[in-house]
Image 1 (spheres, one colour):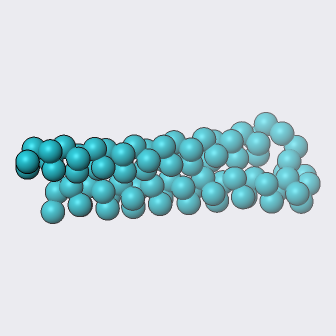
Image 2 (tube, helix red, strand yellow; image 1 turned 90 degrees about the horizontal axis):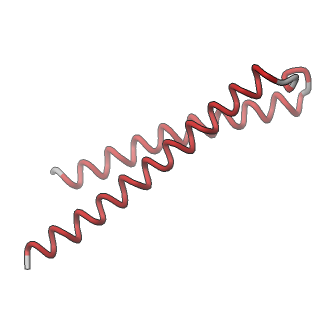
Image 3 (cartoon, one colour; image 1 turned 180 degrees about the horizontal axis):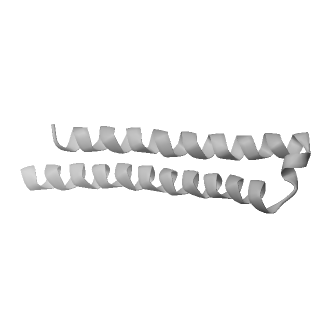
Length: 80
């Protein structure tokens, strides 16, 4: 019985960590997209472009930081 409980807890933990990893990758993509838009286009000359770059960069950083907090919380629950 305890093997089944441990298996189900491991499955929940791994899905939590997978979700955090997916958030982290999507945040990295958004951040790299913001850097690419700033470096390779003329978005910086327009106010809407600057807003878009700041929005992508901010959301990317926010996703990466929150994913790390979620991963830490999942690992703390896994190893008390």
